[in-house]
Length: 125
Image (cartoon, rainbow, N blue to C red):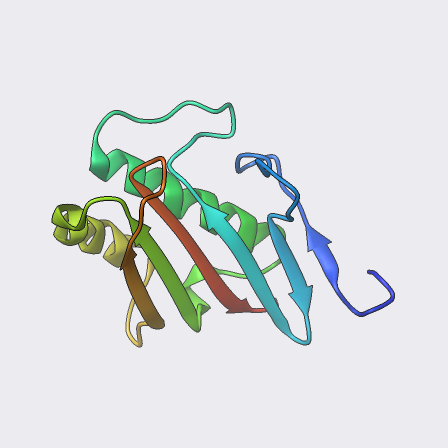
């Protein structure tokens, strides 16, 4: 834990950060999960959008679990899609990771260099 009460969360079950950021930070009873894209921990990317979305959410779940938390308890999720035509396919995958009551959510079309990125806030486990 740092002097300001923040604890970095790391796991090899998700891709390592691609820049100067943490996979997650635990602070004040919450875990702030950094955006996860459609890459395996080894850096590979599945071919179909559905498989890419599944990978992104699986990565997010892996980081949540490393923090002792679970996506099922997420209070907020943000989803960034390169192409909004994938919105319904993303929702189909989303329902595999979240259930009622669903977290608050924002879905944004973004000029990201891959198909999907997701982040979340979950209560600390």
